[in-house]
Length: 385
Image (cartoon, helix red, strand yellow):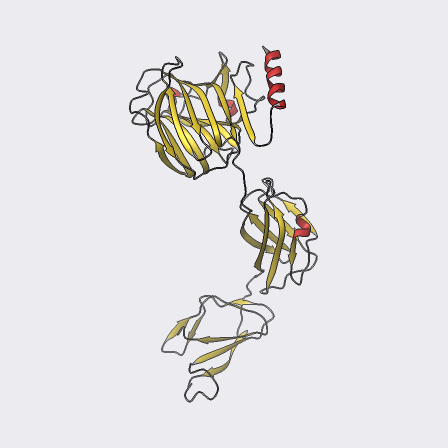
């Protein structure tokens, strides 16, 4: 049997090209930690009778496994599920066809088939973050049985048309549960299973005969800058919307007046880069950061200009900021705007954030808007009109 497994792997490897994604796993080798490798709560799963079985402690919980899969369009997913109980709202299975996250327990973007719930049906859901939306409502009471043993098949076209089929008796006769068109999520990195159970159902989930084929949806969208932070005067942290190819990042980043980075360090997921400069940023001064040609893993390049501010507010003392001019009578204008104003000056050597500062004449008060007053700089206060 192992010789057949190896031969199949060689044939699949020779037939592979970058846009095609496929895998099968019937667990005949008695292993789920290789060929393919499943990740997650592996201590709570075993191979029993050449099937993947949940074997968790007898207490309520949620257990998941995931394996790499980029199939997301022109795709077909097929798998067998056995539940040795009647599903309910507290005991059910989810099979994630598409997921952008390896961990299936938290926020993710993707699609899954749910076997169970209060209506005891097999339905297709879309998940965005932690929000789940049913997009194909399967037949009620489809799995209202003491033992559920069925095969599920789902297809998705290049245009986003989904179809859900059920073989309720494993006889090769499929019933169509429904169809829909949904293109909200198009990127997949993982396929997986999730079991939600009470203490008496912690060993009664079975999975088998996974078969996935399909193509990766082409990524033609350049990455975006999610945020820019300045942890200290010589470091800038940039977070991107998707993993970035780290090659050439040091030459792609430039801060006007500071130069290019001296050192670069990436996060494990390639979403965040910390760049350090030999010259320090001036506290309270705004700079221009240019990013030229940073690419995601599909080769889409980002060209962007953003403002960068390093700011550590000082603690003002008496006479750090003084009033240098009060213009209380704008009429006649005499070359000035017809508006009252007060001018402030920062005498200190550090910048201040004027947010929530109060200007008062003893009888009334005005709360200042947020603004940075740098050393040796003036700022004019006037009414919003």
